[in-house]
Image (cartoon, rainbow, N blue to C red; front, side, top):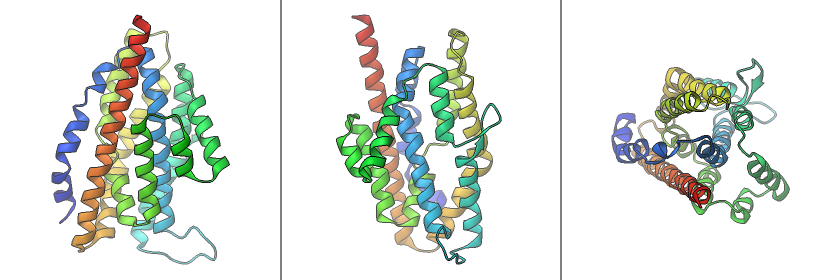
Length: 262
């Protein structure tokens, strides 16, 4: 088994994700705000997958020791550098999570829920307790729980699978088109930061992070059929969790529109 085989196996889930009816439901700024307020959890937990990989594949403790494959160390550190300390639209250093928060604020989305959730994570010191006790939609709880279960199991190739195949690579382009259409129809709302965020993802994922992540998977799995099979299974599960997340966001948007019309 190899990268090509895994890509073939996950095509049904990718197709379902790329053809999801959520995209056509984002027709107004209110719809967009609802999307952002729930999508932010996926933006945030992505960073935990990334840092788990860095902890597994490089030395992040003292005394320092050369750990693993130097090429893989370079790949993961390069991705961390861009994701954790990229250049914002204003030319400042920010993580992509912080960029997204700023983009939410600039178009009037509410950031209190995600900020309260992270405060609770710090307070409980147990991510699973925080997820369980939150008021999030069951699909979003399941999405987050899956991410941190994969991390907790501690298999680098599985974490890399959730990171590489479980995070869509074509969807940013779709959202950029949606955002530009919204900006044209609602010029009074500044979407420049959000458009920048998605365009930055297209640039990094397509030109740099995507190919780097594929090399990382190859290195971690090698000739082990067991590892390749586990990568396939985790990738499918990760995509299914993303589809369920999209279902939850679509449901909330429709609920919001129904409330406004009553």
